[in-house]
Image (cartoon, rainbow, N blue to C red; front, side, top):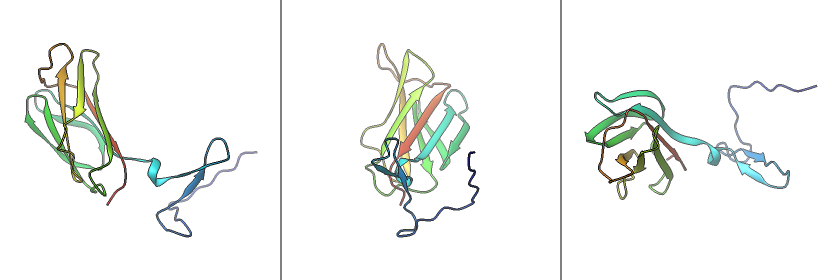
Length: 133
């Protein structure tokens, strides 16, 4: 018979913000907080930009053609977190804009594969993982 655990809050014993989960092979552990996505965003970047859905994003800015910024609600602990961006198209790509990654702002751009020109894209997806401040 399966067990069901229902709780509103999980707190570590040794460190309140650290929960260890046994891995799939039963021989390693993973820190639960380290494995969570800390920022995600799905937005329409064409015409009047609009958020479809998000987590830990307070607002976003259209910086120009194919150039966007997302303001983070709860800042990352440092600028060394991992982030990626993508589009819903095979002929357009998106990326995190180099050198502009900050603890409370993600900047990302969308480009044509064939010639690299920036363009506004109707489907943009952004995620980031790392430590929160």
